[in-house]
Length: 116
Ligand SMILES: [Cu+2]
Image 1: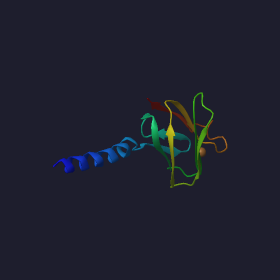
Image 2 (image 1 turned 60 degrees about the vertical axis):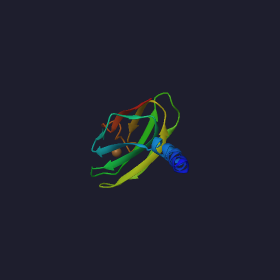
Image 3 (image 1 turned 45 degrees about the vertical axis):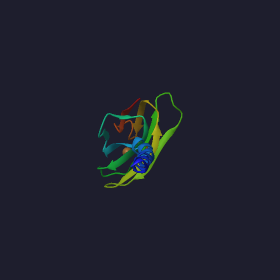
Image 4 (image 1 turned 135 degrees about the vertical axis):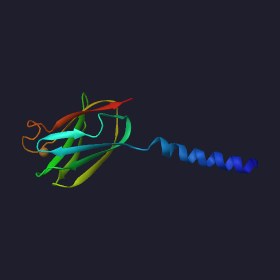
């Protein structure tokens, strides 16, 4: 019995870190010319950002934390396609935009909040 409990504790110890690092997910739906988030905020830590291009033109994605220096990027995604970006995000407000031509100025921008 003691051995079984010890084995169970060991399995739980192995499983716990994996559960803790399940990435948050957020989808950015792109159209001409808007970016719509599937949720307005996610928890800090590992996350998957998905760019889904529901438009007719090609789009990409850039995101940067306000006050931060790193720009996260998803390359050009053609109409009807999707692409993912996986990273660890610090808490803060992230500006999210399309960097193609004048798309940002035309409305392809939004803000994602990353909570502590
Ligand atoms: Cu665009």
